[in-house]
Length: 381
Image 1 (cartoon, rainbow, N blue to C red):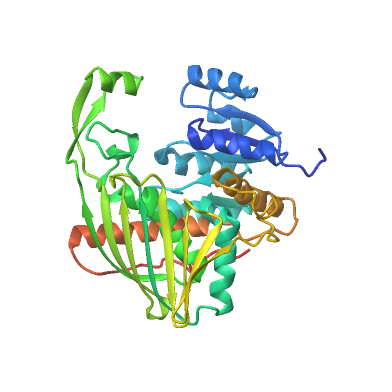
Image 2: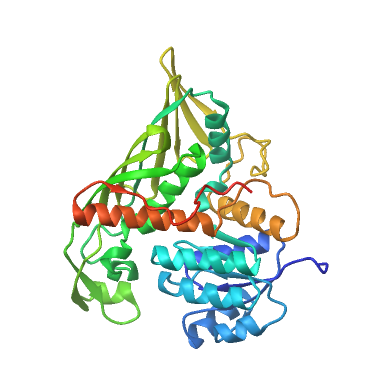
């Protein structure tokens, strides 16, 4: 370690918080400690990870050794925690959504820029080497002029009416499926093509207007024993989006968290005047190419790209993608060239604008023009 080595603290110890700790350790970035949802769970999880427990945000921010805060807590604490971290002079790497509204996201971007700190939002799928290759392929003109995008993000983890998660209880305007998984597809499309969404027509549907929330802290046991209570659902299980991008490029996106048999089925298909290219998250090292004059072929990731760390034929996946985004962010903090662009608070704001437009369109049953309160463009650092 040297004087320029940043040190991290992680807020939130669920699936994604633990993934951040693992990635930081793989990258050799010191993790000072962790902050969980309550003192008991914080103590338990910190002990399991061999890290210092912080029992309040104030205690974490008062630690002078902490230079970077990783925000992996629930959505509704992101804005408050991130503002306080920025005010304390810490760099912030936040899970998405950056905030639960456009205003929250814009305020954080303004605060971060005013403070001069480094900031990032974890749109993980940018971290795959094949996504970087796909972006290079599109930008090179190999597909000709991009004319149409089609894609989907389908899951089934909320298929049953007894499936429950804190996201189900979000306010309707925050959305669920669009904010949770649609934001990833929207960011992927922006990043790969460099196009900005301009107009949208959205339709929301809810498979289960009522779900059964488990009573107690052990959800699987409570559900199995029938210890549940009914709760009205006001967020969408599924969304269909028609989007017009800059230059008149049209897109058709399907989103669902109740699509039986689909686990983490994220796909983006880019159709150009000379060819097409499709990337699927569940086959993350492959790009499927098509043209009129040849059968569809598979092009593997570019093993020479900085986001590839193993020779060809040695698969890399989701944990590697998270590590790549974090690696690029810390390179910027240390004044080193980033291996590839990473998503910033500006991209978090763009996702919030996309989400708001989807909600407005679905609730008003009409086309919506995306508002731009500032110059929002895909981050290329």
